[in-house]
Image (cartoon, rainbow, N blue to C red; front, side):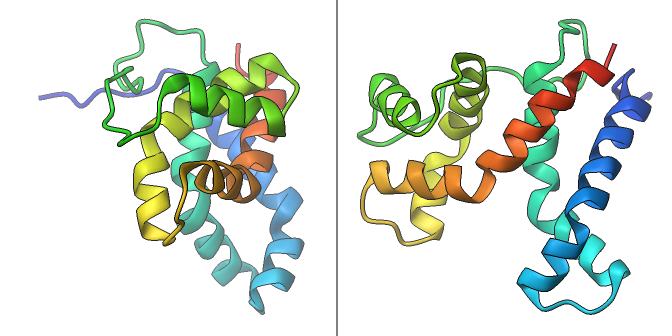
Length: 146
C-alpha cells in the first residue's frame, strides 16, 4: 500500500529549512542551547507541527492526499465569532487571520488546557504570541511553492 505524499514536499522542506536557518541563533540563545544540532532538533520538536499546518493552509493544491481536512472541532464554550474577534484584535491582515483562525480552531482547546490558561481569549493571545510569527513567515514564503 502506497502512503500519500505531498507533491510539493521538496519546496516545503526548503521553506522550513530557510526558516530554521534564519531563526537558529535566536532559538539557541533564547533556549540556552549550545550546539546547532541540538537547537535544530528542539526547533523541529516545538514548531514542526505548526509549520506543516501553516504550509498546508496556504497550499492551493486541493487534490493533495495529505492535506489537513477541515473538520468540526470541540472548542468548549468558544465560538468561531469569538476567535475571529480575538484574532482581529491581534492581527490586521485578513488573509493571515484566516490561516491563524484555521490553526487556532484545531488547537485552542488543548493549548488552553495544556498551558493552564483560564480563558479562551488569553489562550488565543498566548497561542499567537508563541506561534503567530512562524505562521506569518510561512505565509509570506508561500510564493516559493508553485
